[in-house]
Figure 1 (cartoon, rainbow, N blue to C red):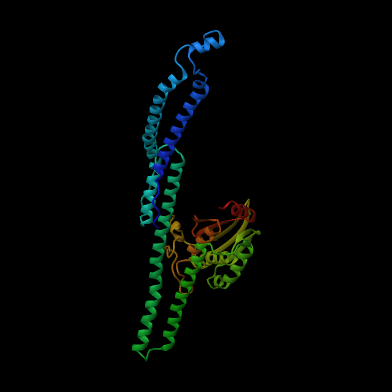
Figure 2: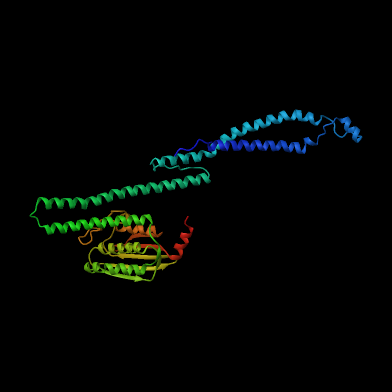
Length: 377
């Protein structure tokens, strides 16, 4: 957007410095006039002697002093003006140099470059704080953009697979009319179901990341019982023991999103509980100003370096293999992480020494969540 031509900030500061310096000089001369010059007599000494009978002041008259003082005062004011303009220009340039660096960094960011940083040194003043905040913003933007690009690439790859399989099956059905149509239809149904599940998971992940949901009181213990009841048939078919323990733990957020979060955690714990026949424990409790949900499952040991990657979209660990019953779309823990982050909570994953995984979710309790909402800008 084009702006009307106007004075630059540096020129405005320069004129301000020079103006203040000039005004200070005029005030100094005014003080000289008020307290010194105007008390000098404008008559000669004989007139004063005749009037008072004595010589009070001898020397030049007020007019003589003014004639000599006025040119010197004008020269001093002119010097102050020039000195103020020159000094103000230099000082303004030094003061605005950090803003120039910040503006240059912002201009590069607007052009799409997010890898540069200001990294301002020197005393920690307002400009240094602004530069540090800007660097932090650039770092988060770069990380977010990289994550979105990686997510879009993975999503397109994951969606391309079922579409390609569907096309292959349709071509097979067209080229070979004698082929068993029931088998093709069943395979098409399986592939389309996976594509629908992936699309719904992407929409849910986008909704959680956008924070577009209504908050209400949610009891994590009731949500855990509902999720466990839904997944109990799956656990029984796999020979997995599913236990829900703990106490009521109130949180504030979207009940559907929190239910999906807990369901994903319990489903992952059941499906990836290898070998078949392990145990899954869901525990809820209240700790100070947070509500805690723990989902723990047995299984094979997980490498510690693998655990932090499990919350990334479409990342599957070596032990997180697909099964014919619940193939999954690689977004289970990514959705959990986004839901927890959108509710202002924390998510911690830790491998169990005996094998398996322990997932701990901490969400703000109603009082703490309300305080955070009041403090939010």
